[in-house]
Structure formats: structure tokens, C-alpha cells
Image 1 (cartoon, rainbow, N blue to C red):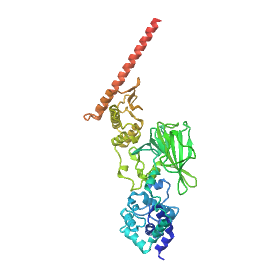
Image 2: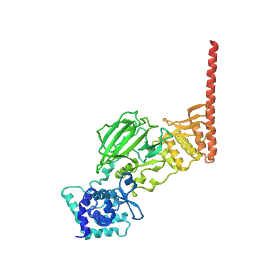
Image 3: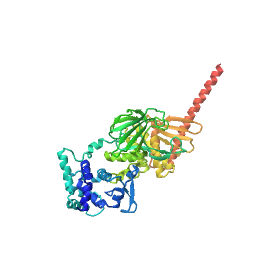
Length: 514
């Protein structure tokens, strides 16, 4: 018996099981294993149980996947390391399933080994020439087609369906993002170290992502999740919260936690399905500066050890499993892009946006949660126009670099507030805000007077005309805006002085009468 045949007999059960689950011909899987692992004798196979030459992606590493360093196209490349050969076979199948460039292969019959080998070669599985021919020769010389025939006959006799885990429609319904969006989620704070929002002088580890919300239904992300914790106390740090646990085939578990909710719709012990509403976003808790959803992910190993995980890794995984096209945008960048496989990530997802492009995306899309889009009200249109123009003028005048400008745009859009001190340095505080009623409100404090007033339609029109005049320089716009604000402050101060004078006169007259 040849070494090829010995390898095939040893691992045929693994390959046939993958064919039953995913519809990948057992003959092709075995031929790839024979070729990629040198019949299981390569250093990668012997040391790492890696029989298919699969490299470790950032997502694999972020999820705690082990890897070894080997020289391939270049020195010290990271290759996946597995606890068993069976794990290598399973990951090989998932690799093909989750990489969109192999979609055409899965449209072929599960016993069409020639079509599969040609499809793998065209999709670029290996860089060597005549990859398809090499696989076909291994299959035909060693009679590996018999394993395909065995699975086909078995499924026909038992009335089973090959590729039972490849039902795309079922997968699509089996996964969801934690909030419903059409295009993207606006992430105001990502996973990692950040300035403590409650104390600007401290740094803290942010163990989740914050998603901009406004009374949104929050959703279970997978099927058959178990609610393991519910907190109904709004006066705790995370406010009202829910933790849902999802089991994995290797004995580990993934826990999703939703914080700062306004209401909870489930109880401990409940089983939930993907897209099921489990609560409503809110602003509860002692450590929150505004309404948002804090979404955290914890990986629980089979031995019970817990590790906080970047939710972007988890969301990238379920996006691929469920064919979810949404992005999770923070400062114009998709947090999921680096964790997606090369074939799934698109150039648009990783392309940097200019501050102005990012601002337009935020203010023109309801997906941002900013709530300043989708209106036919001409007054509201002027509010948005004035607000957006002030945003850009403020960040440009403040001489920030592009990265700082994008961050400032995110903050202003999230708070629906443009701080104007860069335009009016003599003011103690000054800001234009868009209130819950979508009205533009000017707030100012020049050290002697504080006021807050809603801008009239005429004032908004003048402000928009100034900010959007192509003939004015940035400095000219700043000076004119400053003049308009100063005029409003002086008018307000004169009004208050008049009212105070009238009140004092009335008081004196009443004293004389007494």
C-alpha cells in the first residue's frame, strides 16, 4: 500500500464527515491533506496538527487560537495550530465555507471532484502551478473517489441530505447584530484603553463597544442562547443588563452582555433565538454619559476560564456566518474589517474617510443613530445644514490633524452639539445644540451672562448663508459667526438688563407706596 493510500485510510472518516456536513468531496479533502501535509509528515502536520497549510488570521489569534511560526512565502509566518487532526479537518471546511471566493465550488455536486479541484485552483487556494491537476492525479491514482461514492450511497439509503450545515437561508436567520441597522452601527467607543468618560484624568480598559442608540430594540445574536444573568437595578454601574450564553462544539461558550438598558424582556433561564428582542436600549447606570448600548463579549473556555474578547472579532465571525453586510464604524473605520477573511473584506470597508465624508455619512444616515436625517421639514434642513457647516468650521479653525478632526466630528455628532470656543475664544463657553425636538439652541456664557435660546428661522437662514458662502475664507466665516453670536449675546444681555431695571424700579415704587 502506498503512503498516499495509507494516509487516506487513516483519515478517511474525517474527510467523509466533512462531506456529510458541508458537501465538500471527501476525495478532494484527502487529496489536499496528502499534498499539503506530505502525507502527514510535514513539520506543520507533525508539530501543529495542521494538514492544510492554513495560516492564522488576526481573528483566529484574537479568539485565542494557537499558532506556530514557520517560513513559507516569508520568514516567521503564523500558521494555525490544532489540538487534533480532526480539528484541522473541521477548520479546513469552515475556511472554505467562510471565504466567499470558494462560493462557486459549493454550487457543484458533492461528488464532482474535478470541478472542485479546478474551482479551488482558480480561487487561489495554492500559489503553485497545476494545483488542480496535481489533486486530480492523487485522487485517480489512489482511487479516492470511492469515499465520495460511499457517502453518496449512505445518504441515499438513509434519506439524509449532504451539506446539512450549508443552508444559506437558515444561516442568515440564525445570526444577527445586537441592534437592527440597514447599513452600519455607529460605535462611539471601541474595545481597549480609553480616557475614563467619568474622569478625564484617568485611563480605563473598556471591555466592550458602545453603540449609539435611541430607544432601540436590542437583539439576541444567535439561536439557542441561554439567558444566564439579568440585572434590573438601574442604579448599578452598568444599569439594567442582560447576559446571554451560546455554546460551542469544543465545549467553550461565548457570553454576550448588554448594558444600560431601559427595559429587559427576558429572565434567567430563558432560551432565545437570533433576532429576538431581549430588551430596549437606554441610559441606566451610574457610569453613563448618555444613551447607548454597551455590548461586551466574554469567551469561556471548556475548563471555565473567562477572557474578555473584542466584540469586533465576534461580530466579524457572525457577519460571515450569517452573511450580514453591516459595518461597525468608529471614526469612519470599520472595526470588523481586520477580522474578516481576505475574500470577505472589501476595499471600501478599509478605506479611510475624510472628516467631511465621515460627517456626511453620519448626518445623512439613520443608521448612525444621530437622528438628524430623513426629514422634509425646511426648518430642520436648515438646522442640519447649519449644524454640519459649523462642525467642519470648528474642526478646521482649531487646527486639528485629520485623525483628530474625524474624532471631533464623531463626538459632536454623538452629542448633537458643536462647541464654538475655537470660533469665539473670548467666550467662557459657547455651543450650538440640536435638542430632542430637533430645534437649534445656542448656549453661551461670556463670564457675565449665561443664556440658552432657540434660534429663529431667520437666524438659521443667515447662519447657513454665511457658513456656506463660497466667496468667504474660513477666517471671514469665523469672524462673521462670531459677530452674529456676539450680537445675540448683547441683545440677550440688554434684554436681561432691561428686565432687571424694570424689576428694580417696580420694587422701589412699591417701597415708596408703603
